[in-house]
Amino acid sequence: MRKIAQALLIGASVMLAGASMALADSSAALKALDPDNDGTIDLKEAEAGAANVFKTLNPDNDGTLDVKELKGILSEADIKAADTDNDGTLDQKEYMAIVDARFKAADPDNDGTVDLKELDSPAGQALLKLIYK
Image (tube, rainbow, N blue to C red; front, side, top):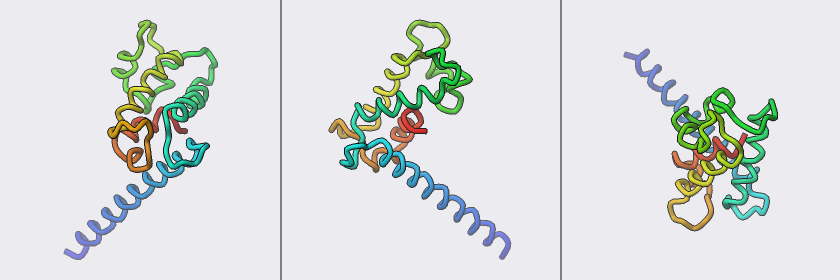
């Protein structure tokens, strides 16, 4: 019985540590993506972050991102849906269209900005994958 209680306590501690680390990541992202220090990210700031991430994800500098380069960031279904020219890759315009859509999803109050609370939401976390590395 004691071993079960210890295992549960350890499991709960790991979950809490993981949750606080996610918040720390959102906080660090907000700080990095908010050059005007107003405590929010607007679409222009999100797009600037996305442009940097796009460059980072494109080590071959071919101007497109393929499934391999986007692994863990976008699903194959997301890539296919955003690939308007059906070439199997996303160019920067197609990537930015996803960023814009995810920004809108992460901004449920439609104030044109995403704050820390919104970044911590599932929609905010999906946006962060595209705009912060």
